[in-house]
Length: 106
Figure 1 (tube, helix red, strand yellow):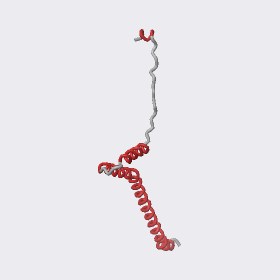
Figure 2: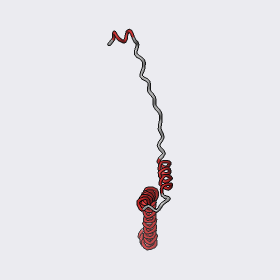
Figure 3: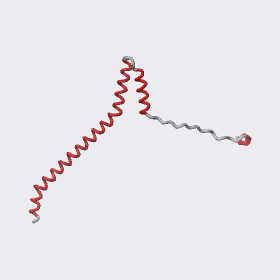
Figure 4: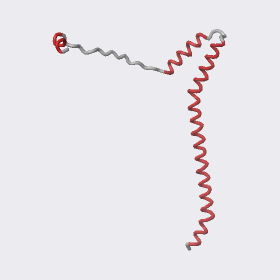
């Protein structure tokens, strides 16, 4: 191997890298456009595909976010109710029991 490299030096291997960018929204938009162009007729299979695609898009875009927002809102409301209840109990305890303790220390 060394003998052959002496007569003909090795050249570095070229590296061609072409970066790619994948835009999911653009891809979905192109698919919808192709499907819309093909939906000129009243083909039942095309209607099924369109309905499935719309349901999938709604469930992925709005479903998870909407569900998460609802859960956060419910959690915040529960937290406010618990804090209000604790403040009410604290206020009643101060109004009722503080005068009794105050007379003991006088």
